[in-house]
Length: 132
Image 1 (cartoon, rainbow, N blue to C red):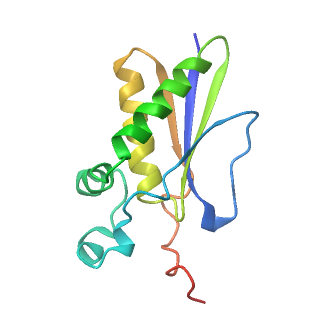
Image 2 (cartoon, rainbow, N blue to C red; image 1 turned 90 degrees about the vertical axis):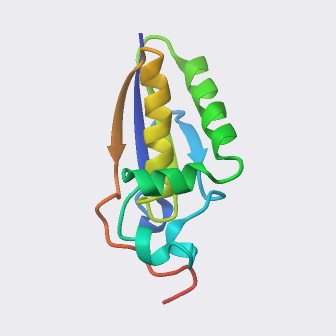
């Protein structure tokens, strides 16, 4: 049976992971704590591993469908060897982490072996988009 390796990362770090034919999950359309003045102060310094951030991101309209579709695509790739999954957002600390953890949780609940790597979770916050 396959091992699934999920890597979350931020496009803004210009350090995209490499893999042959990964399942790609784009979380950019989901709500991002640093971009929301209502939660920026409270959630920005946390990460997608924090329950409050995870709940915030996963409550975005369309998030559950995005995750379900990713799980389905991953399951279709299962077989001998490793299945690489790349989950990205802009900074790699909030949306991609929350979604990667949720995908991993759902796969593990189905008895699938999953490793998760958060490539940019400890990197400093990126400046707001468009700021120099």
